[in-house]
Length: 264
Image (tube, rainbow, N blue to C red; front, side):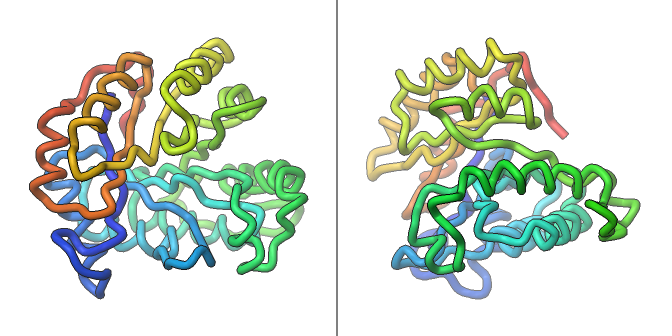
């Protein structure tokens, strides 16, 4: 299993975000040996997170090999052509390191803030997912074209989120990978879900939002359990990160080989 980390929501070592925090945090995560950097998507919930594409672009400019993922981008509150344009631009900056995790969203406040229709989000997402896949594969959709740069190729890999109902099997059939949340699903639920994902022929399986407490022991133990379940990647989220804590977690959770290794 490969270990990733969320781009810090505060300055590493303490204090609020400032003009250097994103770059410094990304550089530290790669320097400490993490394999991927992830950003999240929440709007209007009483706190502010950086725009996912802008944050990953900053991270791309100060790193060399670490993968860069969104876990996840809420598609129904956005214009799909604009998302594709921004994804191609991020690909130009980051190269083939981008993992574009998308989903229908789960929190009504985000939809109210951006003016989206929360109740129809699942139907909207289904249409938008197909549209975005076409934009990224061809650079065009229904006679409209973005004329992407040759250097970005087919755009970033699309990954689907969800750990219950049909979302697991859909991720296996319709995307390059599956993202499950370690916040909302316990280990027994994740074990059942990854079993269904593998049975459906799924490839890369990623579990995100594994929150780090004051004592890193519980998250380290959980990371080892999730590796045993067969997840290819796990992403820790430390709300009060220090380089020492991140380094210790990385030391205690070394990479292990997986059957679906898809390093870029």
